[in-house]
Image (cartoon, rainbow, N blue to C red; front, side, top):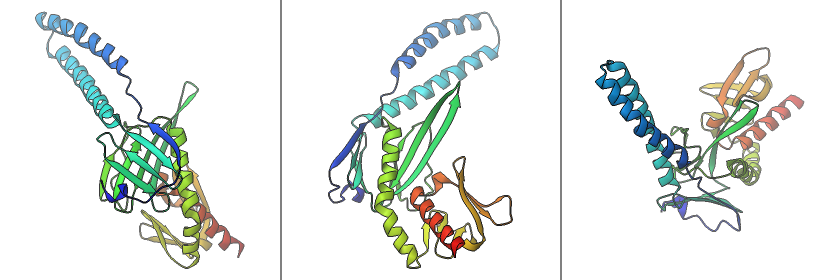
Length: 269
């Protein structure tokens, strides 16, 4: 068990989420149809001498099915015995192999990556969250079909957790708990003149910085989120002076709240 699994008591248990079970029925039916019906057809085509194209087409289909099946098996292994426990003062992520990682709301860094898509009038969402402990252990939980960056600041070891049920509940709950626990301290640190870095973007009393560029609050015209990206617009310019994915900014609600307050305070003065 890592240091992130030996944190002090986290208080009362608020909610528990189990791993989502892979939908095996579709893969079983698909496998029966593919190998039971497709293989005899392939043999017949070979006997008929139709050339290499049918063989290539079947090979691609077989490879695609095998890849999806292996991915489902990996998902099932990660989910076996996995659970997510949300407590009053932190979260406990139990992996499929039995390893446990604990994260305190006071200190954890959370990268949230939520994508919304709309098809046939129905909106679906994909949730991926990466929690980084003070020991550098990062645990990514959520949609297994998407990956999370290992380049986030503070990561020493990156492990992949399970897909837990009801991400639309536990995701916002984690973000809200982190915001409640950290916003007061962050505001105080900034008020005392400390420069705070949030991965590739930083802020302080005098302005915001990103990739070597610094922009004083007095020259910032607008801060806003557009299609999952954080934009800093400079007065008198149409294009954003800074453009950062929300997923790349840890504890984004905390960052955004502090940035808005600093900007508004400068505009009022």
